[in-house]
Image (cartoon, rainbow, N blue to C red):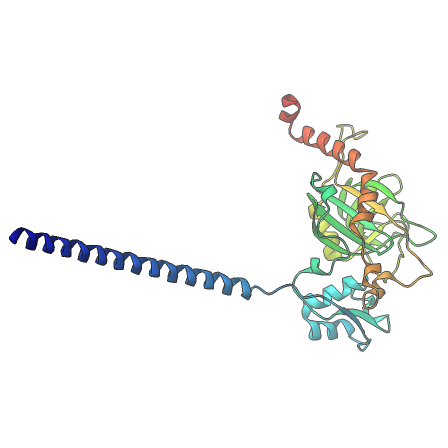
Length: 310
């Protein structure tokens, strides 16, 4: 009888300990589930709190012509005013000329959101730096390894002195130079593209249409940016031959002088104010092998160790 009693006590103790263990494990499981739920809720809240980029639409406004740029700054801030200048292919002086101008319904501090160019081009993923100048939409784009890093308005050559299309490179630069066509024209942040003809990138008036003598005119902030961003050529010691090309520049397209300015179609037919990836692939494909080969040659000049390794 005593033995049975001891056995009963031992069995009861085992059951009690087992129950405690189960309850403890159950509590841990509940705690773990609660923790997981809290983490998931937290992640959901963070994800939901990230705003999606808005769809930007465009409209026309007719602000007063007098002190128009000041009006734009007061209404849209300096960032918005600069974006509006770029969209209308105008500088501060000429922004007062048109009766109506195009403005976005949303102003964000990211100029690339208003770009007419694709944000990424796979065909350029092996190209360190390149500039594209589109004469149809009067704008330039800068890409690094296929990613758009800057864009801006241009004014290319007028009918009588057109800007030539093709593959060029940024050759030599000067903070300020005097035009060979007119000594009164001071060209700031000058970057030569075609040495014999004097075709170049530089700051000058942007009236909202092609007006240059074959050069590519830019807003001053864009000309300065390219001046610091693009690379110069490398010549032989006697200066007679190019041994390494500068940053490639592809100029292409044709401006329609009789049609509606493409950027003025942003409110109604925005696709006509843009450049598609397919269009650019076709244009770039004509020059991509030359660009890659010249880039490799430049790398070897700047880093002779590459030649030894190959």
